[in-house]
Image (cartoon, rainbow, N blue to C red; front, side, top):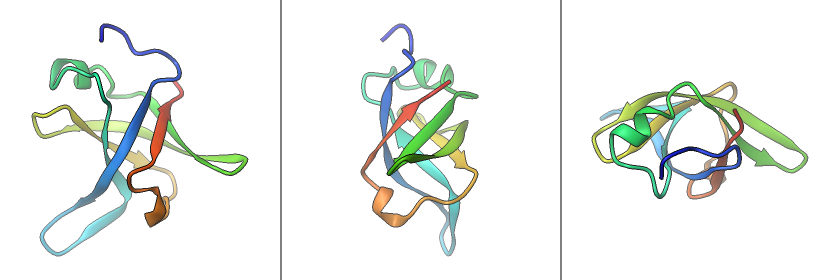
Length: 92
């Protein structure tokens, strides 16, 4: 995929975590159709949203996660565990 449209969707894969901790405000996201490293690197700095009823939890893509095209997003407030496996959209 050459460019990222305004309504491009990805999936929340997991929390960002370590051996004994997990960070409830940072999530690992996968965007299907993105080139592993070069395409995912272009997403850094873009804003994402996870819909909660009428509202949206907003976050920002802050870094790559590994070499398989995953990215790390930091949300202002943590989203619930039910968000794992659900869709997020790029809004800016």
